[in-house]
Length: 196
Image (cartoon, rainbow, N blue to C red):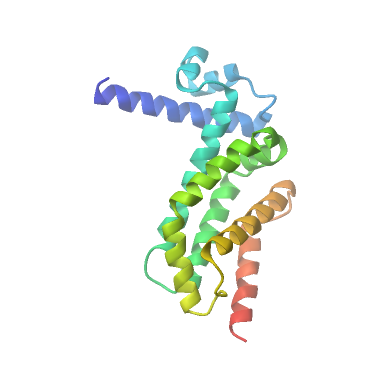
C-alpha cells in the first residue's frame, strides 16, 4: 500500500470512529446500528468491517482512543515547568474539559458498557503501566514539596484513578453537575489544607 493509500485508510478509519462516537452518544450503544454509523461516516457497511470486527470492537477502539487522549492531556501538563500542584490542577482541568466535550459518549459507557468492563479495565491498565515512569517522576516531585504523603507511587496512582472514576461516574449520571467546577472545588480544598 502506498503512503497516500495508508493516509486515506487512516483518515477513513478516523471518520468511522467519529461517526460511531456520535451515533453511540445520540442513540446509545445497544440501539446503534452499524448501518447508521456507515451512513454518518460516508462509507459502506462492508468498509466498517474491513477496519473493525464488530460494533463492540468499534466501542473498545473508542475507549482506547479516549484513554490515549486523556494520557496525552496529562503528559502535556504534567511534564514541564511550574509548581507540581499547578501542573496537576491544569492536568485535571484539561481532562475535565475533554470529558465535558464528550459527556454523551461517557454516559453511554457508564450506562451500557458493563459487559465490556473487563476489556476496558485491561486497556486502562495497559495505558497506566506504559506511563508509570511519568507518574513516578511527578509523584516524587509532589512528595519532595510535601504535598502528598510518602506512600508507594503505585498506591497513589490507584487511589487517584479510583477518585477520578468515582467523580466521573457521578458527574456522568447527573445532568446538573459541572465537572470543571468539581475539579476547581477539590483543588481549592487541597490548597487550603496545604496552607495550614
